[in-house]
Image (cartoon, rainbow, N blue to C red):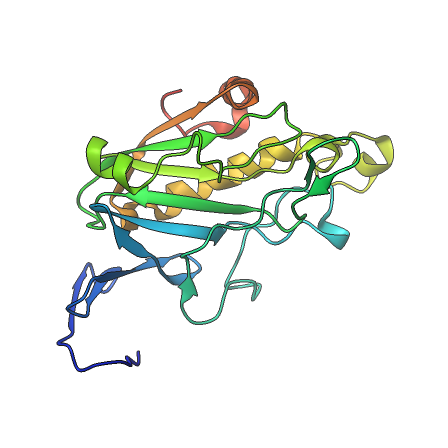
Length: 243
């Protein structure tokens, strides 16, 4: 790793065989955390750490449109190269503001993490947020609702929020789509997106100070019905423990 700038002293401190590192440059903290897809660098502010715009699946475009989300994998060569800069939120999922105004992107399967600790032995409770918006609008980036560094520091909890596919892209159900689906079904792609986020949390959240056995799923409006649906689904068994 190369450093540029002035000659301020640098200290690198790591736990558990370099799973989690802080790079201290004398002027702030640049948190560096390893994941199953490689290292990522976030932000330290307001007494906690944040990692924004983390891709949790391949962009659901082209042949992956109206398909279950595809997990990033070193084996398939779909992980990022080098260190991911996780300092900016990802795009909103495609949605409409009015009948004539559309915004967002199909490449929208990103998540954000806010945590007061990066010590893997902290084993803090984890809360995974599901945003509302009638399944046709909104995002995990909505600052009217989502947690931030201050909330993580104040409550001593790890918060995760994410985007999931909306409207037609999240719920289109047609026989022609079922015929080419690996599950022989269609629709409910939004629920599949959240299930993959919960799998990501299970596999990685320890490195962000969280406890994968203490995961609460919570939401507002459509996000609350999203939680109810996943409570009823056998596919979510073991992925969250409170709702």
